Image (cartoon, rainbow, N blue to C red):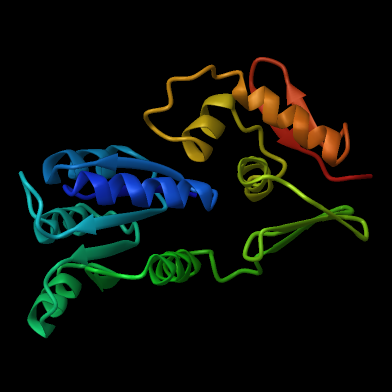
Length: 221
């Protein structure tokens, strides 16, 4: 899952990004409303964390512009304001949820997970079964046959992205975009490292390399 944080308090934004990255999300951060609107319009995000008091454009205007353009990405608004009027205004512009600063990080993560579950198509079972492979995207657990396989957060995120598009060829660039983040400037071959690790922990033939195109999750015979 790929998240965008639009927050001008840089220390808070980077702290949230660090925590959410550890949770297994790919996270991009911008500190200006106009840049946030541009990034949200151009990027394929699963959720937007949007502060209200922003330079450039405030959060209300960013949210309203996205909804007017037909973007249905879930939006969680953050603000230091705490009046009912502010909450109503945020929700009226199209926000899906509202969290007042200071807030509990645990509550933030719970709200994010709740919003992601409400997305179109997210009502389906979070347990994906492919042959003897079972991936529970809600509990973040993986089973091969009767045995549970321990994966790191990044390994799980790579596998999850392949599972959600099982049978399709998924490019290395697509995996980088959704599992790492927009600003990743490291070696793109990092994807191959994680694919190799998944093959060792699961089964060599489970993830097929399609030369020149990417990877495809195969169903076990």
